[in-house]
Length: 242
Image (cartoon, rainbow, N blue to C red; front, top):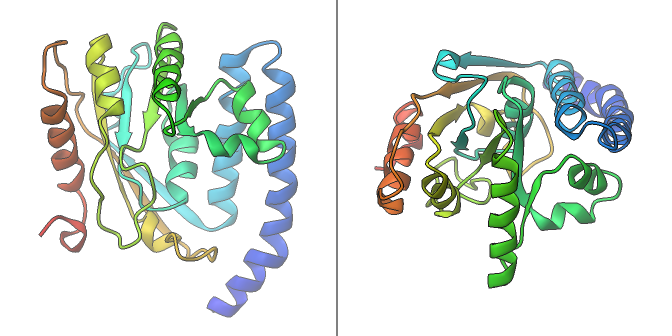
């Protein structure tokens, strides 16, 4: 069966999604000239759902009741694989901007769409670049109900285990007094780990945990550690810290 699926994946789904990706990017670029908040989110939401549907990947969502659509949050999630992006884009159910690596802007058409959509590009190569990233994030969070999604590990896992968390997202949340919502992503590593472009059909579960409310004086490292512990409690035992 896996050989039949590979033929389906590369000969049928891949061409469809190539065209869909280009069209989605173009729609985003043009639409954002008129309404960035709408066109910077909804076309990509349905593109991500189509990606999951065609690849026979099912997304289960738990705990969505913890999230208020009118509130701004900093969502933080573990980063198991590429399908984390499709899962969150398609099923977060909350308008948001990504904090993403600046190198993505070098991808033809896709990079332009990301810039036009207002996603926040992270430049870690200079102190000024980090300041610019924080300034851009603050500007986005001034919009009511607009949130930011961050993978605090900074990269996909190679082993299925979570890496250490960087503090940028938590610093931003503390500075603005925004609640942090930990999200556990389980199953993405099995569907498509970092080491391959082949997809394995399966189920990915997004678990929204209760927002962590805090005052501006809270310790950044403490909040980061708390989020990491909450996220990994819903992972299988073999993916938790031993």
